[in-house]
Length: 83
Image 1 (cartoon, rainbow, N blue to C red):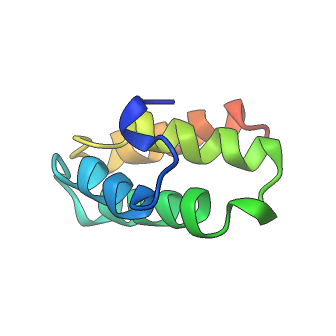
Image 2 (cartoon, rainbow, N blue to C red; image 1 turned 135 degrees about the vertical axis):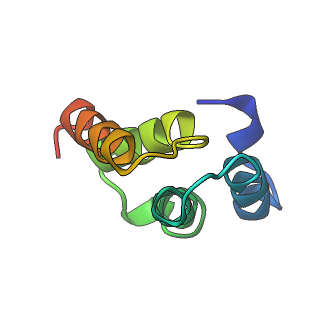
């Protein structure tokens, strides 16, 4: 996981700032926001495969513009997380 997403008191806000600063699409932004929430506000409820999915989204979704690319990133992350 990217060091910018490390645990800390402002982890959720840091995750949002890092993830959204290069956002190019509302759909990608929604994936990023859901991932930050899951990892930093709901992490105790996540299974390891869910954590892997959300980390993959945060590492690969920022900067995605095209709907096709966003859907492919989501599909690959879901496969990697075995969702």
